[in-house]
Length: 210
Image (tube, rainbow, N blue to C red; front, side):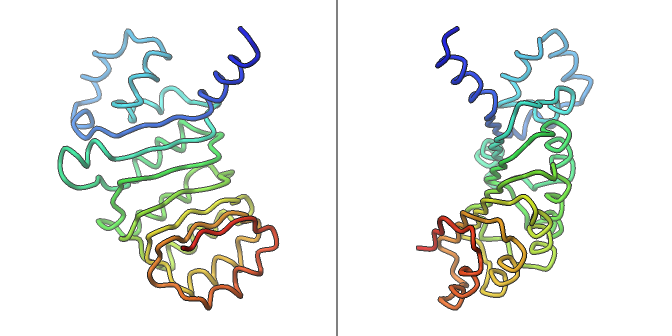
């Protein structure tokens, strides 16, 4: 195997994309076990990309550093995004102990406003989190404290099209001193007054607020 092939393979193993299918989640555990018990781990991982998020807890992915997870299929089937549940959070935590970057899309935090707190139970060494286009996310104290809990590790924070405010920016900038990329594009409730707070981030490399 050539060096370029090995590098490419390593990169593929470090990144994983899963799209949740709401229908498969309705099958009993024993049914799923009977269907997939003859699969190898590699085969299960391939199938899990589309169907078996709940099974990932049995096969930890120590090599995965980037996880992109979407409720898209569930959303398309039922017309609404699935909730971000404590169970889903637990599976991510158990399955990806070395996770560095987490992308979440098409999940509903509105059904249970404390759902955002679940993120604090994820691996503590996260470098960045992507919560783009979550207009239903409002800057509650729970939300702010959740993000601040990663003050020792966060380098990237993507909060575009959320309802964060100037006060939210102030609180985050006071604690997240390691941030070097901050995306607040199309956040309708922030003003030019945030500039002074952003200037306190000495390691800042990029901001996207247009």
